[in-house]
Image 1 (spheres, rainbow over the protein chains, first blue to last red):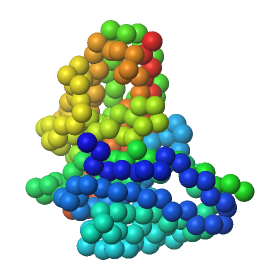
Image 2: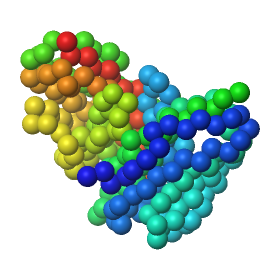
Image 3: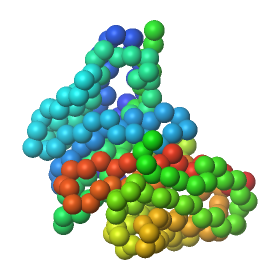
Length: 115
Length: 114
């Protein structure tokens, strides 16, 4: 049962353009959503997050949008740069009895930013 | 540098063998998580420990076990290894006491079973 889905395994975008990565979830208990970036041979690194009480969070070139009614979130990267080429994972967690909860990950989207 | 240390980085072993993967969490983090990533797939949650006790269990095989020690480092034991156990194994840690917190990942251990 894939509770977090990233339906696009790959995405190619020209440098300078906008990259939009999408993620859908099914578990309505999720209340915190994160994006991680992963380069080959490295561990995932945290990129940006959003709480369910917000619908948008921005950090520099990265913006995450959350649509709770559609159970959908997206990551926008503007402008895209070649160094953004990596695999992006969407993750979600549910607050559980006052302790940090495990993250449930999607399968990832490989972003390639071309010159 | 995430502050999470995993050893070894690479491990090659034969089918039927047993290996132990080690993880040192970030200083002060009480929760440790283990994830498995096979063949460019997503990160599959295996198990979580909090301050020495098992907190949550995911799709972890019975041949696999983990523990967290008093100094908070954790070990993942994989036994009776099969070819399909070849994967990247990641450890992550997170801070307790905050509602919304990210997990910090180590660089992973690449296990190859031959």
